[in-house]
Amino acid sequence: MRILFINPPVYDFSAYDLWSKPLGFLKIIDLMRKNGAEILYFDFMDRNHKFYENVKVKRGKYGCGNYYYEVVEKPEIYRNVPRRYKRFGLPHNVFLEFLDGIKRVDFVFITTGMTYWKIGIEEIINVLRRIYPNTPIVIGGIYATFCDYDAKNLSVDLIFKGKDILNFLNFFNSKFNQNIKLPEKLEICWDVYEKLNYLVVKTSYGCPFSCWYCGIKEIEPEYRKREIEEVCDEIVKNVEKFKIDDIAFYDDALFFNFYNHLYKILEKIKKFKNLRFHTPNGIHPRYIDSSVANILKEMNFKTIRLSLETISKEREKESAYKVKFEDFEKAISYLNDAGFGEEEVGVYILCGLPGQSPEEIIKTIKILKNYPCKIKIAEYSPIPKTKDFEISKNLYPDLPLENPLFQNNSIYPLWNFKNKWEIINEIKKMVK
Image (cartoon, rainbow, N blue to C red):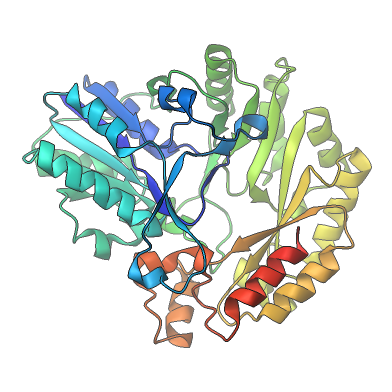
């Protein structure tokens, strides 16, 4: 059995490789490989592809960097957005050259990222239907999970929602009369890449909190930590194989029960003195005390991102009361005392929540300017199947919220007032 796995190009106003890899997809690859399948893989977002040897694309710190892009025509729904729309990732002809060498595949698997990246998915499906008209196409991932109602309009044979491997096996085997079995051990199949600039690791699945704006429960309903030895083995194996210097943690609650989990993992891998660690997903400030801050500095954490989200007391319940401003103040103080500088510590604030005014954002920014940290605006967009999505539909009944393209956080979909873009630009200037 030959299976072609594809990570599609991204159509958006901006995209940056901030330690971005399709972890769940790579685990499905391992599942099929261990069932004897021949694996073919094409990742449009692979910045180590030989194509990049002949183009000038800026590389950032710690393995991150820009993608190659082409400016494309904006969809009608974005006609009033004063920004250029782009297609990020390897060019179309590079993909066609790759397919030229493949005579036959039995299945095609496509991972789907953000809901509003559906144009890239459609592009790939259209190509595949021309070349392999009778080959079954399976899609999964974020768009497939949250916008399954929209994905039903695509020319695909199976839409898989969530990340439950056993559910996937049942659906896949039943639909296609296969006998794929769950192996004793499933891993992230990094082997499909010849080179990696960084490693992405999850030490846990799900989240113990239930924030109104977050869709993690739809993907990973239960919070559970991975076995410490399993995580360490994964890190050691791939650090040694790919000569990795940078590791980004993808956990949604990385410091939850810190000393019984993450700390033990860090202790077991501290022999790698060159490693730098990053927390792009945002850390809950309440879990950082003086001791934790000093451990992070000692272990060479280079990117600390704190989730504050808002200083509004009224909104605390929307984030399950996980963040209080006094917790943030203490965390910043502890990190500062441990030797972390402003360039290493960032704080996320949400912008564009249901019923949220620009004045609330501006007030938050003005207060945060007094602290040694970089302010990071996290543009909000309503995610289907979340509490905030239902609230948004009631507050803004005339907005096309169920259209995946309208869920793009870059357009601040819930802000529909006069001088919208002038105000947004002023807010962005405030945090530079």
